[in-house]
Image (cartoon, rainbow, N blue to C red):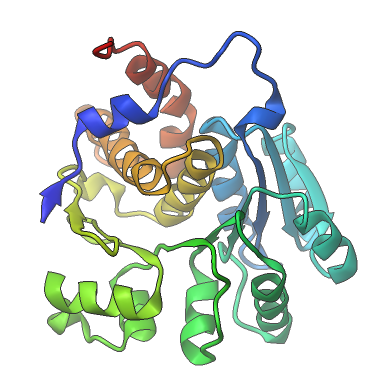
Length: 279
């Protein structure tokens, strides 16, 4: 295993050109947030927006519209029950994030099936939360494009078939290759599995043990892969920065909340973008 390093982050997050516009930094759609779990999709969308995504659209249950607009006026919103509208908009997206707060009912399962069928290269797909449980319950062919799954250990058990006690780097790597995705397996020391190698994240703190932390990471990953070309290094950078911010916050507080991480993402990205690189 190799550690994710600050050097990877500094070579990923670079200064933006002067002639930038929002279309340069990714059109991201997040799909999730049923009537009970609206907070999950709001936290994921917040992280994607604060991570620099150019345009963010949230497809969610209408019960979340007011809260989302109040929390994140930068995001557009659509009713995820209007499948035709959702799929029409999906064709214009660079990144799709599905799963935060989605639930596992019939509507959620139908949405996942439709989104997987409609996604195509070069779009990038982030599968998180409830969508991982649905995928484990009903395996389906995934599109031939860049895909990252972001399970915690129990979700990984369901998806990979490997019991938590047997989740060794070798076993996990074999399962990742079999699934044909990049896997971010969240734990005390999160590991990232690509076809070429296994990476471990050196950061992380018990202060992060609170609901919504994974939703925030999924949003960060979506925001990063929408604007940085190297898919693997964008994922690694999001994983590293997510915990690095939390580690710094935990120096002065007992619990770190997900939205506290999101509000600091632009500052940390700016810091890394200022690092001088060899010419």
